[in-house]
Length: 383
Image (cartoon, rainbow, N blue to C red; front, side, top):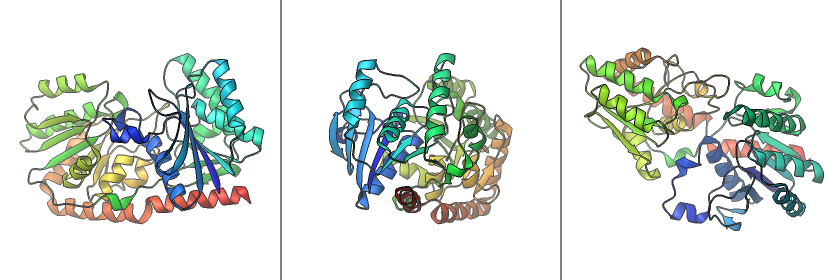
C-alpha cells in the first residue's frame, strides 16, 4: 500500500545527528506519527510524509524509511501561510500517489491540507486525535475549532487510542460509525529493567509547562522531606516553568535532593527510567487538554518502574490503581506524598507494582500491535 502521512513536524536525518533537542517539537503525538510511519515503511509499504518545515530542514529527503516533503505554512495551531504558498502546495500535492491519507492532530493546518487533498483525489482519509483540544488566544481557538469541524466531519475514519475524549470529538463532527479504537503502543524492546538505585529515586519526565503539574510534585516532595524520608527527585525536561520550579525548590529547602538536568539524551533517559523507583506524572486536565496516552508513563512501566499519576485520559488505561501504580486526584500534593510514603516504606509492594507494570505494558501496549491494527484499518478502507 501507499500511505501518505500529514504531520505538524517530522525530524530530518540531520536533526538526529546534530544537537537537536526532540522535546522542543517531539511530543507524544509527534513520536506516535514517527513510530507509525517508520513501522509501516519497515513492513514494505510505500510511505510519504508531508510536514511543516522548521529552520533549515531539507525540503525533500528520504529519512527513516519515508519520502519526506516539508513546506512552510502548514504549521501547528492553525497558523496559516500566505495564499500563494497554499496554492503552490496544493498544486504540487495534486501529484501525490497514495492509497490512504493519514493526518495527525485534527486542529493543525497540516490535517486540513491532507483532508482537502484526500477529498479532491478521492483518497480515504484517517484522522488521529492526540489529546490537545485547543490552546492559545481566543482567535486561535476559534480557527482550531473551524479546522477541527472541517476535518472530523469529512474524515473517512477517526482513529482514537481510547474513548475518554470521544464526547469532545463528537461535538466537532465525529460520528461513531467512523470510529476506530487503536490503543497506542511503544517499542518495548528498547526498554529493560535494571537494578534500582540504592537511594529512593523519584522521576518526572516531560515539558515543564503548567499543565504537567510539576509544582504539585515539588510540594509533595517537601511534605515527604518534612516527614524525615530520604530520597532523590530527578525532574527531566525543559520548558517555560523551569525558573518558577527552581524558585519553589529553593523556597522548599529541597536544593540538596532535587536535580533538574534539563534535556537528557535517549540512552541516558532510558537508564534513568529503569533505575528510578517510581515515576510521578501529575498532569492536570480540563476543557482544553487531556493525555491521550501518557508516553513516558508507558516507557517507565516498560522499564519496570511503576507510576503515580492523575487519572488523565489514557493514563488510566496504563496505571491501574493499586496494581501497576497509583492514581491520585489532580492538584493534590498530599495524595502524591501519601503514595510516595507507601512505596518508601513497603519495598515488597513496590516490587510487585514494578512487575505488574512491566507485564501490563508488554501485553497490551506494544508498537507491533499498534502498527498491525493500523494496517488492518488501511486495508479495510482500500477494499
